[in-house]
Length: 143
Image: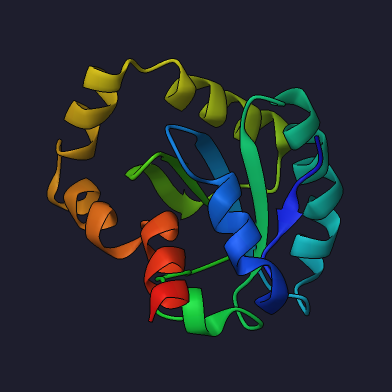
């Protein structure tokens, strides 16, 4: 399965794809970023390696009304989420192997371990409030 690209005309479709207890991985990038353009094929390959998860490509400038206040310090930034629990948010090296290991490690957590990890630090507790992509999409669509 290849990744989905968040666009103005597919937000409802994307929200449907992210519903339930699904794992998803969002890559936040920008069209002008050379590193992002070079990373995109690796991200697509990562999606192929994890067909049980949803992968989403988000241009932070094109979709600023949804993710504009996400604290993206560098590219690529990954958001890994299961249901409404943010498991990871941060800049990663543009390396498919590293991303694969990160996705595997998060997906290996039980529901209880994931919930405990989400509350394990002030930073991770803040992620739950600031970076829940599914909630952001739902709020935007329903407003």
